[in-house]
Image (tube, rainbow, N blue to C red):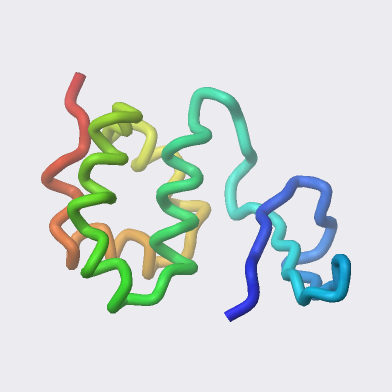
Length: 103
């Protein structure tokens, strides 16, 4: 799988390019990237783009990421309508919804 970079500079949904001889995919973000929702945006993007097997292996790391960045239900519920349904599905399947920060 080639690396994907999510950037607001991308004008279309997805664009493949070469950078120093390596294949790279530039992807438009599903939701606007803002400083206050950056961690939640990155987290949901990883859930969408990640392989299910890898996500299951890394579930403890993902739990720690949620706690460390204090990702809460408010950020997830605000951003989730912008993401594909599989982000919410994987959040529940992996049990990560139970870890969301309640501040």
